[in-house]
Length: 113
Length: 109
Image (cartoon, rainbow over all chains, first blue to last red; front, side):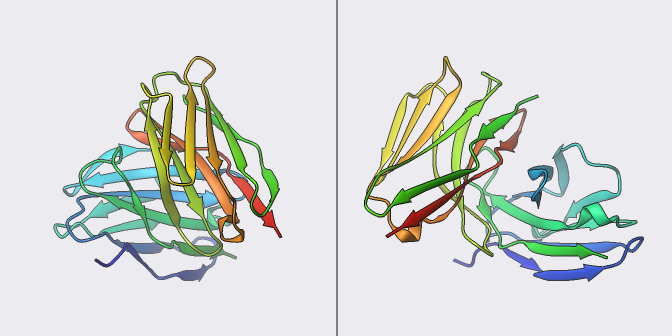
């Protein structure tokens, strides 16, 4: 069974640009959650999607958005990038709910210059 | 909201036991988790415990939960060099996972 895949693995952008990250969950998993990991703030929850609907949201500005497609694949978008958005973005999938075992992808390392 | 805290570093000799500690603030957290992160990789779920349990054992891993003190610990028996990683404690609260800062475990021969 293939694991959670995230593309791209590495990304370099400049301030003011926007970026889209992609996550493909494990086959059959319907819940996808996104996290931001930085040395200063640690791991912080961004949002969770289930059946194409955002089910839960963390405390991030509106520049951070996401969506989920009918095949459960998810994308997150960050607009008007800031230097502080440089982070490892992790995606996790689970069968039904984030309370269940979450399987994490390897992450996308975003660097904003 | 929930706040989860861990010590930053732990260094142990190979073959010894490691104990990684975690405290949380919100007693309504229902599930508590331990994740492992190796360099360049995502997080791997090691084990979890439901809040009405005191202890859970899984091979070399033992989780102890003191709900009164809101204290969670992970004991790794016979620690190996392959156990060197960052260990995260997480609490499930208000429909999301709240992670601790992570404890970097270094195992030396």
